[in-house]
Image (cartoon, rainbow, N blue to C red):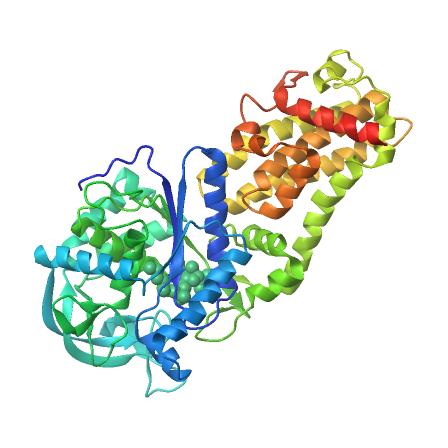
Length: 547
Ligand code: ME8
């Protein structure tokens, strides 16, 4: 497929665009937070490379049309009201999206029309009689093999996969020649790059299975206007409206200015975050459309599992939802973000939303992070170490004031320093592998070690030498600086305040400031303290001086 140069293009990351048929719930916040963590991480890693981050609302289709009717509101007004709620959610949760796209926007309509015309010109769209089972909740047709009789009411037919009610419809539709792309999609997903395209890997195998075993039929991409009037009219045939998913998937193009002529401003997408419920649309339909347009495919797709309530998927249609605004008002934005990432960061299993767990995670931040900062900056501790001549950890160790190998306190400090020096690299590797939960685990583990070391070395005790107390404080402050930098993507507020308290300048909070040359380097039994630690040194000095 004709490529667009990807070097030095902005990093492009997206969330799904949500249906504004009801107010947002925790599931939507979760997807936004995961995408935001990865976007913020990318900015830390490559501070000079812009990140384009798209979120938005998917405003067309029968589901929205019906929801507006039920509220006796004009559809556009209904969408305005609810789209605002999704935007407010993103703002409140400190989501750093650079674009918030609504599919009702004229710019988006123009992009959809342009894609339609391009595919039509290639004879990839045709008109045909079509019949199938339509689900308004899922906004898609199912084949007879994909539906079953409802166990509750045998007169009702439901989707076997989602359980939503379906209705038989026979009509004239425009069809997209999806079937022609089966081989090229399969070739993509079995190529070296394509093998890594879906994460977690189980989805890769599943999509390959679908492409290998299921008949990939052409896709109905319009509905008669008599059934669906809320959407983009088919160019030159206003009696038909473009199918909501065909329209919605093109937001990833319209959101960065498609049609863009020769050079895209950021295409292809580097990373898309979606729920596992919409894999088929993103891993099969969108790549087929992109191949039809001769555009490069998305690089990676992260499909996460669901938040549940009593083991049932939290959903606007079911109404079993937890309110993200309430949670953030009560616990604070950072605590909710932390909980979503810590519990939901493995993406593989569904998780029940639990207030108790939220409280537990709130306490975890307090005890591991808040208390450590309080302990290390307490006047009593500062007084103990303040008599030590100001110098780097390296010299304290080098002068053998601390006996690393034989003294228990020395050993504890040495192993804390080792853990601290290796943590950023491990965290980076895990973030690059999209193992967000593992990465956060690693940071919390380092904080645990630091807390334990502080207790073991006990700088407040007379039996601990002033040199040991001094080294313990410096090492702890350095751990706080490193974890503060690493935690910025997860808890921008808490991490920012921590780094402020430590006196770390705004311009020294990138990944390069904690990993590599600028960070501490542990060599044998000597610690080479580079410029970044001097900041901690000075901070500690000024804390001690102010007592
Ligand atoms: O599907 N747990 O919109 P939607 C985790 N408009 N994530 C959840 C969730 C849950 N219980 N419930 C929803 C649509 N989500 C289409 C998308 S994209 C071109 C069009 C999240 O409002 C998750 O990301 O039903 C899921 O994929 C998305 O919200 C579905 O939102």
